[in-house]
Length: 444
Image 1 (cartoon, rainbow, N blue to C red):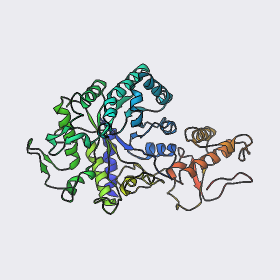
Image 2: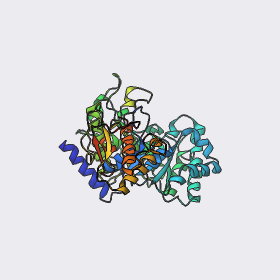
Image 3: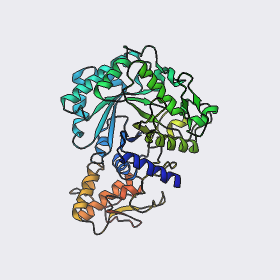
Image 4: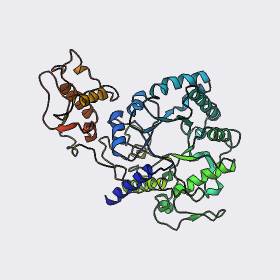
């Protein structure tokens, strides 16, 4: 616990000390019991070191949940929409429908066009990528948002034909030079956007290189061409990407880590998957990218990075590891502690998961706060509040205290009794006494 607390302090100092890049988390929603987006946004903003979240779509409710939190949001466009985006009019409509409604309230930092397009095997899709990105940038410029909302696209390490030693890193034939990557890097340079890479040492290690993958102490590996020593696999992967970019004349384009993580469980044949390895990798990864040390070829650099991922997602297909990358369970308790929680939720410690409990406003809460809580739950919180509308089972008594109690409890129940979901700016409290009355039934 002391180590985790020290890591939290280190990460907080980096993030609040003028660092050039933030620390983010991938927020996927392919889970059957995940808390509502508003509860997630509040937890991230109030209780963690994360200042940036990366989505895998542009769901309006999820984007709106981050309004006013101070957390930057990257939204994503599915690969299959890329051909449509080569039509400028379609790109303009997409921006009008998905960015403009949130521009005044949610800090949308980036639109990500597809995922791992250049290594997906569809050459026509890859060929359309840069045009799609250019059209989105043009559409954003038409709304005077081009300086606030950048455009990029995440790539896997498979986009490289070689990555070891790092100095030999080159882009795969068919995507090199003028065909795809050259125009892409030119676009990123001209718009001030980073080249984003999904870097997973988990997929590249062998039993002999596990220490290198987990950032453990080891003699390291020397790149014979440069004489530089690599003491961890992440540095080697990032420098391989840098070498490939430099070979095309784009050493000045920033690199961001769009995804990196380690599964806490896997199939019997998935060697290395496990809680302790996941704790070591993710803790060391967060520390490394935040340290300002950079890599052997990119020294003294802090990388914008997104750990994968926020939650275990039990609905994801594939081997067991795919469902076990999360840092947190649906009740916001950590799968393992890597020090990203700055402080516990403001309310009391969690009650037993199966205990019936309810969330109510504190007795002396002022009317302004009560109304704000109702507006939050029934608006950005995404809850259905018909029961406290005129004619609803809980409309009477028609008081702010009663309506806020029902709304706050509905939000708390939807978040699986997470203590942070009964925080409400420290105006909520958890009770074991059922507040239901007459035909007005409070969920539990």
